[in-house]
Image (cartoon, rainbow, N blue to C red; front, side):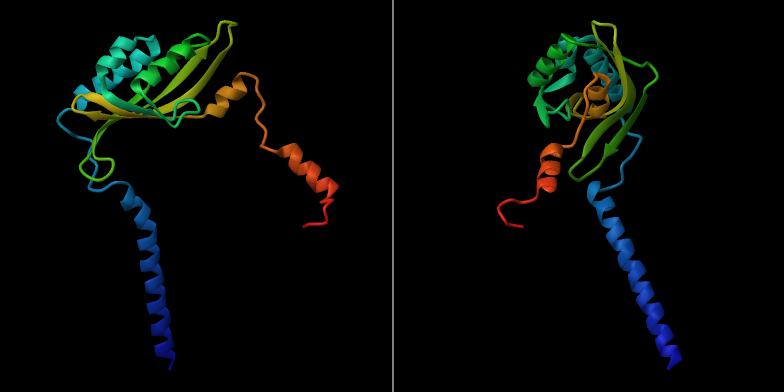
Length: 197
């Protein structure tokens, strides 16, 4: 009797472990199909093009940005925008130059990756760096950023930007407060006068 209970416990434990591993691996395998590789034929060429593209942003060289980008390129996560076309991105960055000048640190990290299949299939260049925005009044705001550039042939087709926008907002002297903070506190302290709860 004891051996049957022991066997059932071991069997149950084994199934829990197997199911746990299955559940854990699902998000990982769903993200990238196939095995990403750090070595692919155009790696050095694409890293150079990625560097030139990022430099075009820094210098405000929109002709170079157009030259290195696919006509249908999309740019994601800039400011408060979900996505922008190449033309919209250039307009956004041009407006930004009216209030701040970016300077990118020279010691950024560059990594070429190819994904053979799935929703992220293609050649990518990943870049981590540091941006300093200089304002006319002499103030500066520095923040780390990451950009993932996807290439179609030898041109940027997608650019995903990641940085802490709150750091910039706070650096400009703005306070960030939760929405409806005052309204929630007022309604809680006064109670519901309608009698509804």
